[in-house]
Amino acid sequence: MTFNNFLFIALPYIAIVTFVVGAIRRYRATGFKVSSLSSQFLEGRKLYFGSMAFHWGILAVFAGHLITFLFPTATLAWNSNPVRLIVVEALAFTFGLSVLVGLTGLFLRRISNPRIENVTSRMDVAIELLILAQVVLGCWIALGYRWGSSWFASDLSPYLWSIVKLNPQTEAVNAMPPVIRAHIVGAFVIIGMIPFTRLMHFLVAPFHYIVRPFQLVMWTWDRKRVRDPRTVWTQHRPRNN
Amino acid sequence: MEKTHNFVCFVRGRNTPLPRNLQTPSHRELHSKNIFGFLVVAGLLMGVPTVSADESGKEIFQQRCSACHTIGEGRRVGPDLAGVGDRRSEGWLLKFIRSPQTVINSGDPQALALFEEFKMVMPDQALSDDQIRKILSLIKETGATPGAPVTMPEPAQAQPAEPVQPVPQDEIELGQNLFQGKIRFANGGPSCISCHHVRNDAVIGGGILAKELTTVFSRMGGEGVRAILGGPPFPVMQAAYKGMPFTDDEIRALVGFLQHADKEHAYQHPRDYGWGLFGAGAGGLVVLLGFYSVIGRRRKKKSVNQDIYDRQIKSE
Image (tube, each protein chain N blue to C red):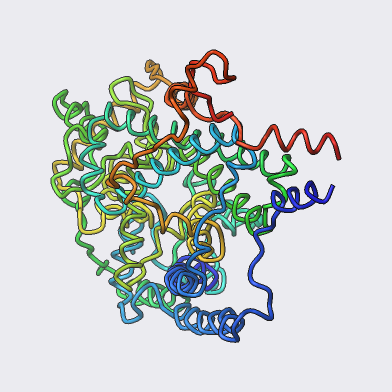
């Protein structure tokens, strides 16, 4: 009982406080290092598919969890039509698999490429393994305890809200199967680890790029010389590589 | 060679934190202080009781036990509890009520006999020893005054045990629509398929978080099912329907549907959703990856300096 209280009452608060305090401290102390060091410069081919599959997947999956947490009644209303329920679950599982495949690829790339290995910290490996485990559990839950969108809305949403309202109600969570409990604990551990890992980068996502004015790129070569058959320039613009 | 060395060093630059002598003292203390603070908070939070301590035995009994047990009114889903304090020791009862599955697994003969008789395991109860003792003393008091059984407000009591009768078709349909959510419950509770599966062609494959309900009617009888719907004894179901109880009509329709599903289940061949869902996910992933390769077809395929790097590694 006490151990359950630790996992589902104390740990969430510890995680949230660590996240908030830690993120602020890290940003104030070393604000310019709040990012995930890009390795596209070192290896780009495998990065593309891994990163696209992982990031779009995790955005969709996270949005799904967030929407169900924020609007449980609307989720249940949406799921009341069996076809809509199946569509939502299939889509969610698709993006879950996308995260799993993308992250596995990224992890293999990180440990197999010597250039990437050299910019990898131990914390990068730790958090990647942790998220990988979390995603495996998530996919397992989607298949093994299906219609998770519905029971999340009716059981876990109230639990999470009870945490928010500082009046934790953990009886339902305590009675859940171990896989689901592990997924919940994993989620809070990851939230608590954000300030100490590269996950910080999602807090500084460059949304202003979306509305940023165009940049005018000027080329300094002489157009006339480029077209002159006696120079080595071809008709085509040189590509970067 | 000098140049190559510098270049490789640059490429292999480590993402290391500030050296310790460059960190401010507050930096170093940050972790130890925070961890200490959180341990204090954790200690405070672990003491938070999940159930209020001043509930009376009767309240707890109504909430947790009365769906399946009576005191002196005969057996329902589980045994009649009148005189249970004389039949079993208090230590055994405390252990069993907290986690019947554990006791059964330990090979306890009394627990095994109960399991044989009732064909189901009582769910674990998140109750403190104090709360269980309150229930036991309630059972003792009630049992001591024969002829005055505790009357619990119970939807099941409105309908005395009747022989199994055929259910009208419209009630079955209502039950099946309620079960899979096409008709929402009046008080806003989630539909049954969120967690339960029933082998029936008329509804989609239900959830597998909770027990399959195909044969629940023959296992528990109409009264047992009604009692559980009237006041769910399972913590997960309790939380899901907190403040959103079923109406009497809904309970009648659901029991009707379950009775029908039980009778018909041998002739039903519903679709299996397990592999279907996996296949849909895998197919969707292929589509996604195709989409990524289309939108990224003009991306830069290798890093700017890849050729230089390869050349220099070769000449090293």
